[in-house]
Length: 61
Image 1: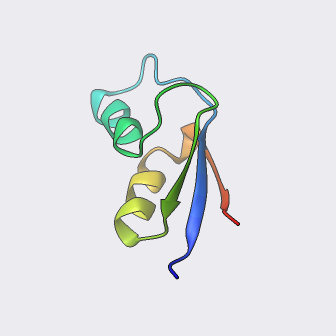
Image 2: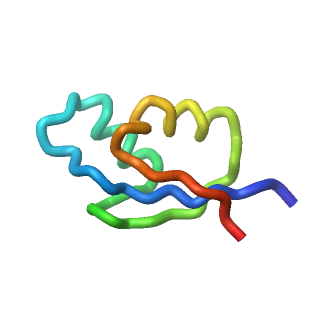
């Protein structure tokens, strides 16, 4: 089974670049404090790295 990570949006996307807003939406995050569980793939890691200042990331059980 592939590893999973839990990603939570903790800072607002207001006044952020459009590409950062699209990346947050691409991760499946819709609103502040929304959490999603994602597969730990290189593509997802790249998206997280792009907006890491807006997120918290932790391993999922």
